[in-house]
Length: 233
Image 1: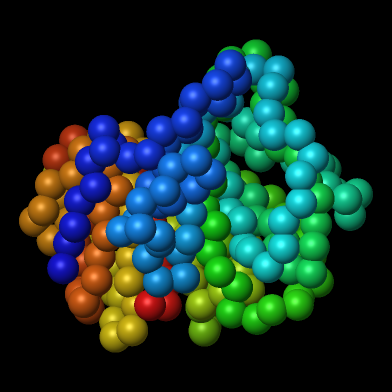
Image 2 (image 1 turned 30 degrees about the vertical axis):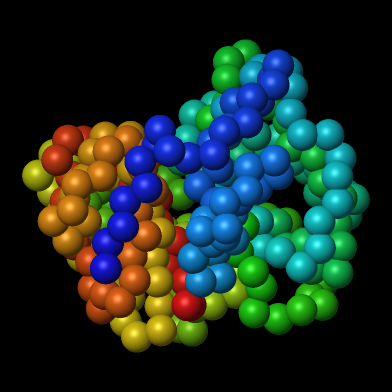
């Protein structure tokens, strides 16, 4: 089953420095029908003004993946980690037994990103953080950027969850087929452009829930950048 959640229907939050859309219930936005998909709990579409960001705050028992769409984000945490993640790349924070972190846009223009929270498969892991560049992604494919599935290769950042975050670019008319299989669900967003998913159309920044499908075929109806989570149901 393919279910499209139009961008205009997503939850909203806006203040002087953050313009956010929430695919699932988060903060002041609550919809009992939108509490996540499988182990995927949060997908926030954030625009952060330059020179601002999220001041230090704590997390526990969550895998938090940040996919930067435009600009860059600078991370600092209570473990002493600090790093900058640019557009097209990804960072992963394992909240585990507890971590305090801050995320700032130190760039001259807005930073736009997807913040994705996935429930861990194991409680009580040591907290940690990592970031990685992906210069060799091949157009027309979905590349695992963060992966905790059985058999995951060492190129993606690790996750303490039976899940993967994948991304790729498709030219208009190009298709990519992704296997899910029994007991798994998918959620995907075209960060730019438009696609069909098993023939169902989805526009820019719409959310697409995939359930009870062994495979999906994503076809770009215009040049598109696609981000997808494959996760245990």
